[in-house]
Picture (cartoon, one colour):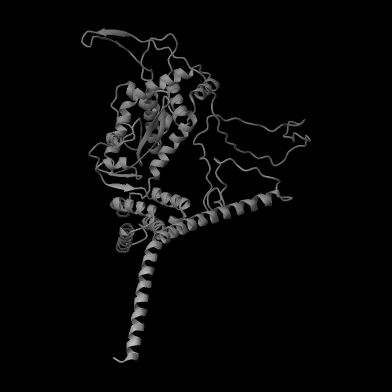
Amino acid sequence: MDRRELRQYEAWKEEAQRLRAENRHLRLELMACRPALYRADQRIDRLGQRAAKLEAENRTLRRRVKELTAAAAPGGGGPVSLPPPFVKPSARGRRKKPGRKAGHPAALRPVPDHVDVDQDVPLPTGGGGRPACPHCNCSLSDVKRHERLVEDIVPSKVIVTCYHTASGYCPMCRRRVESRAPEQPPAANVPHGQLGLNALATAAVLRVVHRLPFGQVVRVLADLPRLSVSAGAVARQLQRLGGWLDPYYERVKLALRTAPRVNGDETGWRTNGRNGYLWTITDPGHTLYHVDQRRSGKVIEKLLGRTFPGTLTSDFYSAYGRLDCPKQRCLAHLLRELRETAEKQPGFAQGMFCRKAVRLVKDMLALKRKWDELGDECYTRRACRIEDRLDQLARAEYDEPHAARLAKRLRKHRAELTRFLWDKDLGGTNNAAERALRPAVVMREITGGSRSAKGAQAWAKLASLMRTASQQGRGVLETVKQLLVEHWAGKPAMALTSGP
């Protein structure tokens, strides 16, 4: 190696050493900068989410400012005060027109099948005894006859009946036996008159079906038939009524225990100022209400039994998992939680999981509505394809915490989300139980709950029997009277186990 090549070799060696040292320095600097880069990336992500949230709020505020500006402009109605936070926003878009669709027959009351009173209403007569105009006294020509049907009610009144009974002592039973008429309530030694069958049934219907407070029930009874009774007396009588009708309540419970499909739900219910829960179990022909201080799985097990053979439709509350029976979870609850989470978490709304999950739930419900339209082979193919989509969505990995949480729920309840796709009479939502709870929720908002445990249980029994009667197409008032007469007569409790 000559001198020139030696100098070039030395220069390359020094350059390599310099580059090696610089590389080592850059590596150390990179290692030192990595935590800062990670923190900066996290901050950028949080700022991006905050910016998306602020943009959404900005759009809402701009729209609101535009509305208020238009309202405050001349001819725009003047300044408008903002509604309180608990007032729901006005519906936007085109609303559905009330009434039946065009082409449907009019919904009119049926024509009366009989006439109780025939009354002639003659035209006024003039000087010659001929029909004349009441305004100018001119004789009328082309006189025609008409029939105008008017349906009215007879003013009610209080009827006091004195039952002259007899009693005798039975040495075998060791008690006194007293005669009783079919519509006479069990005898009670009270100085005043007892409430009869019609008064008891009417008070129960006003309280339970029409959700009137006891004070309003008393006023209705005082205004219409002029029956004087106190609110406390009505409350005590309804508790007695619940005790009398308990065998029918148990019959409804047994009917639901053997039903092929039921829906279950629960809501809050205060008893004597203490928080509790109102449970409901319903099927197309029966509804059962139960007030309990607990919200555990023991309650649903107590109502339906440990060996319930049917399918239970409910929300995702874990207490319903105590029953070892086929279940269908409510897809409407899942869809509602997806949308509410998307409104609160912009990162979740922009993710893939939210969009795919919403579309999947809608496709499942839409496919079930086409049960009668599609052939068996086509329906089966589409249902299997939906189940594959559900499996792929549930098993994927997600960095977003809410997406990971909901994906875990899909994996846990995988078999309970698509069961309705293979059963024609099984729904994918829990709307039946929510509709059964809605009258009770209105009752709770009016009265605030129950004042005693006995009153709560009596209300639950009466509400169960009256809603069951309504589901079966029976007249509620007449059904209550029929059940009372049957129970007072000692007949077996066979009513309300089937349709009319």
